Image (cartoon, rainbow, N blue to C red; front, side, top):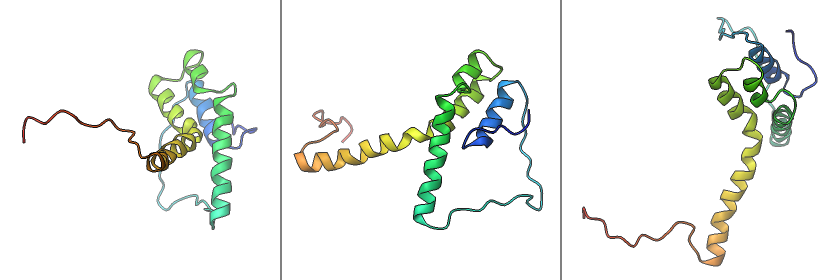
Amino acid sequence: VGWMYGSITEDVHTGLTMHEKGWRSELCTPDPIAFRGCAPIGGPTSMSQQKRWATGMLEIFFGKHCPIFGTIFGKLSFRQFLAYMWIINWGFNPVAQVCYASLTAYCIITNSNFLPKVSIVPVFT
C-alpha cells in the first residue's frame, strides 16, 4: 500500500485504505519508544494544529475514502467502520459544543428551562 499522500491526516488515510483492502493491523509498542512526536507549544499553534486535523478528517469523510464506502464496497468490518466514523466525525464536535454552551446562556437570559419540570412526586420519599 505505502504511505497515502494527498491528505492533511495521511496517517488516518493510510490506515483506512489498508483496512478497506482487507489488511490487518496490530499495535506495536517497542521498548524504548521508537518515535516521539513534537506537540505544539502554545495556544495559537495548538489551535492551528486542531484545525488542520479537523479539516483533514472532514476531507476524508466527504471524499472517496469515506468509511461508509469502505464498508459497503470494501472489506472494512462494522467495528472498524464505527471506529473510523468516531475518529473522522471528530471535526463536527465543535458545532454541538457551541450549541450546548450557548443553551445555558440562552436559558439565563430568557429565564427559561431546557429540561422539563418534574410534576410527579416520587413514591419513595
